[in-house]
Structure formats: C-alpha cells, structure tokens
Length: 368
Picture 1 (cartoon, helix red, strand yellow):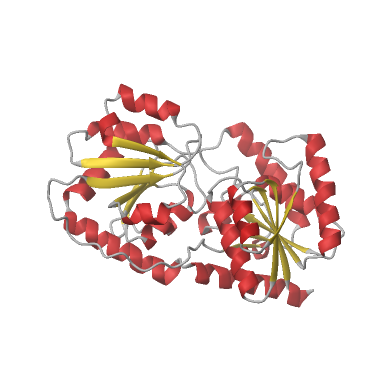
Picture 2 (picture 1 turned 30 degrees about the vertical axis):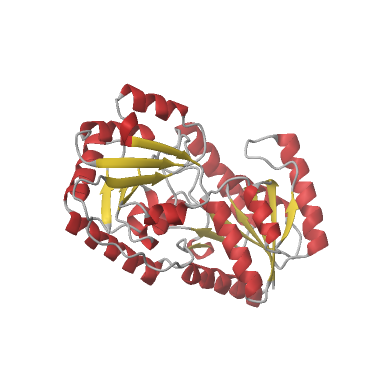
C-alpha cells in the first residue's frame, strides 16, 4: 500500500507535524510505502528525509488564502499524484485538506482528510467560523473519509452537517511509548512545584489568562516553564507588568519536550480552542496531572478530578484554584499523575492510534 501525506508546513514542532512524521515512519516500518508532501519545509521535513521517507515540496502552498498560489499548488500536487500514484492521500490541516481534495479530483487515489480541530469551532471569530464551515461543506464530497481527532469534533461536524455520519470517524491522537518515569515525593518541601505549558505563542493559546491566574497565587511555592515558538514578547511584557518574571522561564521552541516534561510536576494547557491536543497525551505519558481549559476534546483525555482538572475558559480565578489544589497536595498530585499514565497506556498510545488509521486505509481500499 502506498500512502501519501499532505500538510501545509513542516518547519515547526507542532502536533500535526509530529503526527505525520511518526505515522509515515511507522507505515514504512510495517512494509508499506509512505511519502510526504508539504508547503513550507523545515526541521520536520529534514528529519523525515534523514530517516529515509520520501519528501516532496509543494512550493506554492502556504497557510494564508492566496488564489493564484493556491491554484498553482493544486496543479503541482496533481502532477505529483499522477507521477507517484499513491493509493491514499491523507491530508492534514485546513489548507492542505482543500488543496489535496481539489488536486485528486478524477484520480484513482482515495482521499482522507484529518481535521486536527475545526476552524469553525468555538473561540474562533464569527466571520471565520461561517466562512470555514461553508468551505468544509463544499470540500467534503471530494474525499472518502473525514477523520476527527476527538468525538467532540465529530459531533461538531455533524451538527453543522459537514458530511453524513458514516463519512466521519473519530480517532484519538496517540503518542509513541516511553518508559514511565519514577515519581516520588520531593526530598525538600521547600522545592517549588514545577509547572510547564508547552504551546506556541499564538492567538489560539491563552497565556494571558494563565499569567493572570498565577498573579493571584504569586505567594505560593511554584515555578513555571513556558515552552513554544511564536511571538512570546507580549507574554513576557505581561509577566513584567504582573511582577512574575522571577517565577517564569521562557524556554522557546525545544526538541527535548519529553525529557522536559519528566523534569516537571504539573502540565498546563490554558487555551481558547483545541482539537484533541497531543501535548496533553504527552504529559500523561510522562506521568503528569494536567490542568487544561475545558474546550473541545480536552475532556476526552483528562478525567476531571482523577487525572487532572478542567477549568472554565478565560477564568483566571478557577485556573488559580486548580493550580493551588494540585501544588499544595503532593499525594493528590502523584496519584493523579499515576492515573494519567495508566489512561495513556490504555487509550492513547501511538500504536493504538496507528492501527486504527491503518484499518481505515485497508477498509477503503477493500471497497475500491
């Protein structure tokens, strides 16, 4: 079986990019043939090529809407599809989903679109939500299946009548396995509880609410690491205004996130909207309890009160209360971390996710 993956960009350590890197590698190791197409190349495409997966750049494909470049990218991708003849084209991200589906019209290649969070979800501006909803409705007939990474997003698509129920399937994200870290009570009670949020600095993430929550509990024994790319300057300025600079480390983008998580005690994801974040699963794998905004699929990975806490959107006081509970009760924190690791092993391993994807590919080709 030959499977081609299409994504808008491979120049950052995002959840979509890592998903494609790991899934294409696994498929090759299983004896299938995987190849990857993207617009902007970068650190992930370099890695993909280094491990022996075929990679091809779609030069004119970018994230912003650009009619001339978008048409050029459709034409270029169509040439690739005719030349490489993949059995399946798996498209990831909204732009790649449109370009891929248009490029494959009339070709024998089966097309799957994976929505890593809908662009018409709650938290997105009303104008953008309306536009993206109609774009997805128009594009839906041009693929064989739509994968959502959470049941929340599947239900959201059905409520907006994006496609028929039998066309949309939810497959949760999964992360490659790592040994469970040994977590024990702190040797020194004076050591701060180490909090970490791994998220790019962008409109989707709500670093402002997190910092305002931390301001409310400035006197508590905590230290936070903020890890991610993007423009962190506004957040750094807010940290200065709130007098928090001595308790925050801005780490930038890192390629050692698994190791970083294992050195921290609590994971945070305070955000405006999501699909089904891989970062929470990564934290669960590291045996960390999570505090996350109760949006979209976050509640499908976090069991409130057992593996972490779900907090209201933009509610700094509730975020502060959740952090206080978890940093002041070490037994609770360790128990939640153990429960999170157990849930990861049962539901969210990479192998579990990969097998579900492969079964879907095989079912599509059996019907052909």
